[in-house]
Length: 313
Image (tube, rainbow, N blue to C red):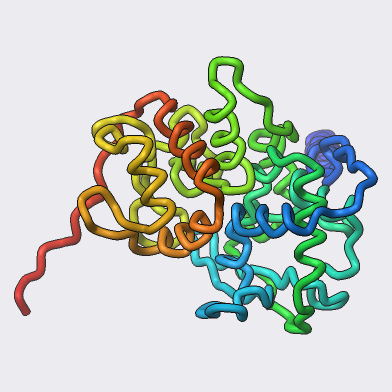
């Protein structure tokens, strides 16, 4: 009996050591960070391409207040509630004390300056595709915004998702650390759209189904499905009849500019904020995103579930 107990203790020790090694935050090599002065104009462009204010401004903020990146938005999911952090240039409550290397590592490796894993509610699985130059420019623009000394509560997550260290295992499966590589099967315009949609725009994060562990089902990328946050259904963006088959590239680009759909309806829900950001892009970049979406492999998906019929009560 004593031998069995010793064997069990030994196996537990080995398993614990393996878990600790496999969940080390520095699983991927640090990204190359060039020495360069930030281009604030491009940083501002990346800020709107990425929709940073949509999550990091105070809930309900309008106009110039959306540039006060105080955080505080509560994202309720089946894992628990994620509280979006303050990313203003305040040195205590925000990211004002970060170096360029800290920022690029956070955006592409999901690692904090003090060596903790970030939860993938922060879409670093998409931001890893961005170039280091664009990320440095983005940080430069954020650094030019007003600092806000507002602390945000920690996430409130269910066990075992509350064990942050376990994200190292998640990253082994879902984070590859690869920067965007142009697809030789696509033309220059389509590749530009691919970069914007899969990198800063992180469209793939909302418009793709996820597995039970919250990882993207990349085999069905852009095919839509249940919203990760709360109720709702995210539409299919592939050129399938259940998606955008009936939309021309020109109609997609036009909708990203003015918010009006080909059937004379308009965007609703979370897409309202997205469209406010895509309206800031150039016509050429909106056309590039449209060209990329039309180049996708059509993937059939069920339409959004219809609301339950009222009983008239």
